[in-house]
Length: 317
View 1 (cartoon, rainbow, N blue to C red):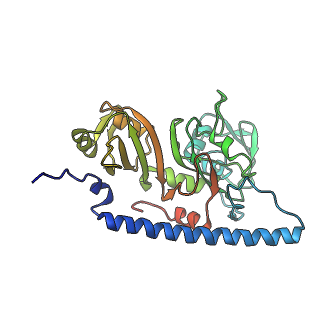
View 2 (view 1 turned 60 degrees about the vertical axis):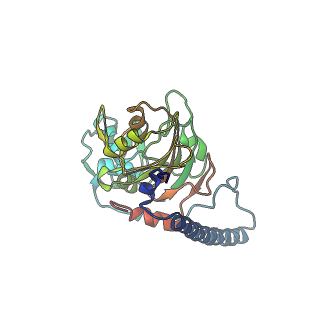
């Protein structure tokens, strides 16, 4: 009797049967469809109510998304670390804000401060690069299906296209990307001005998981498959994946990778260390968020439920 090849995809699905996987996908789709319909029905009703009161129609955003749900940060006079204040002002994530402070780019009440932990409050005047900043009161959360050839920074001295060019005038608040995708990587990207959430989702201790669809220049052989599962050594230390699978058993250039490391270009470097070229890299899941129903290069606001889920997202979830 011909021996059946090993089902490596089973490692990715944690030994569930194909029937169970299909049924789970169906249930998830039904659930998401129901939530999406309820959400947009609610927003349509709210829009109609506003239009009726105003006597005219509100402008749209090319049909990409409903108006953003309202998320307000309460007024606070409590003191907080300077880098946290900068993050809450929507300038940068907390770790990047700390770098701005250390580089001498921040003044508090006209005095240069280089200690990120310096305590400030809403009563203080804080300037970054000479520009006065304010605590963001309205929190905004945008999910973008990033295309290739866009960089995940708020601006670029070389004049290259950034992800902010895609979302355009989605909000008057200053938002920034949570984590990074390199220029040639596509997929799920979160943009927000919620510095506290951004810090939570990018801090290594929370082990936020990401799932990538990788397309290689040649089939991944069994030996290298097993080596990646064991771990590979890169120039900046050991690299491990949580789950690895052939996305298509008939085409072993298509690989699914689940990982929680946030190190720079980690997925590409793992495969390159074994002699493979990554032709395409697409992030399909980030912190439980997926790009379902969001076309490449399009965006939408997160629902209130998604925001709540993110705030409770942590280690092991």
